[in-house]
Image (tube, rainbow, N blue to C red; front, side, top):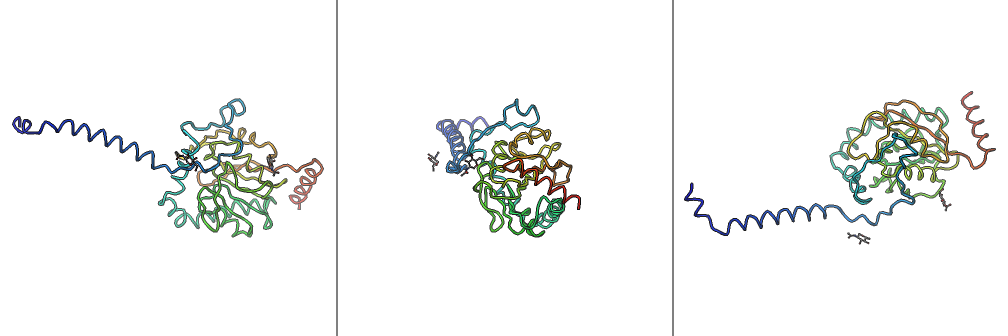
Length: 272
Ligand SMILES: *[C@@H]1O[C@H](CO)[C@@H](O)[C@H](O)[C@H]1NC(C)=O
Ligand SMILES: *[C@@H]1O[C@H](CO)[C@@H](O)[C@H](O)[C@H]1NC(C)=O
């Protein structure tokens, strides 16, 4: 043994040292270049994290995203995961459409959605929600996510929706937990909803979701408080793929007279 050690060339030690240093260097370089330059993604209009005073303990934005680009890349890692996409478009496809159709039919029966509604699904991935809306007759519906999935889903960041003000009658989302800027997420929904338009969010108050979530919600109050132009229609328990609560809000009409009309109208419809 001793003899073998002595036969090793003197150069070996510095060479090994050099090798390991280069490997570490290579690793760091490749780790950084793995992230594509997404600076072209426009940051949202008014990116605001919730102040702790306005949402005491009920909504916590997770720390640890160094930059907006890093956050977007993290979200893309899930959205573009080929295994997940395969599951979403095959095994999950019909099952999810069935459940979503049930939710949407129920909202239709409550006059919160109709076949004439122009509908948007926010953070729709491969668009099962959109397919469900179309199946129950809401033909003018589209989804939006970071990665498009034609023809059901167009590209867009929910912090900065690619739609004009007052475009939709109905918006649905079950990805609120992915919002790094919850107030922008909600602000953009309110901006693109028509006056009188309906927002339906499915959220989880009990189960902590996956590592791709950017916030944790512990009660409905801080979520509702993010809406400045809307009124709560109902809050109820649902069983929606790990999400337990449905929050429905209506964007207010521009003046009080028309607000009363909408109220009268919906009361009459409920009565009939
Ligand atoms: C990323 O792209 C933007 C605009 O395309 C550019 O201004 C910026 O310098 C780029 N950043 C890096 C790190 O390449
Ligand atoms: C769209 O809505 C936002 C927020 O409500 C407002 O600040 C902006 O001026 C509106 N834009 C147009 C073109 O009306």
